[in-house]
Image (cartoon, one colour):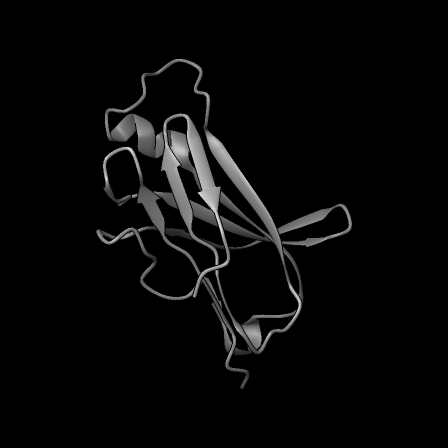
Length: 119
């Protein structure tokens, strides 16, 4: 079994705390195909309870995490019911070595987001 894994977490930079209750979908990308392979909701620490992928399930290739930030921003009182500046946030990235740990966090506010490869 491979030692690689894919993890994520979400931090609410406007409120200065973890973003609990954010729905996240993970897709494997191949050409024009987007195949959903996981869907989770962040816990009280803004993290997932388990890695998004781990071991033999993590393969080299292209992936996309979609963070449903709009639902979170509305639920946390930071956005109304109208059109949002940020709603669904897709982050597409590559896994060149399935034996490594890839951590793809999201830092959000109602009007900005950022990501990086963490550990």
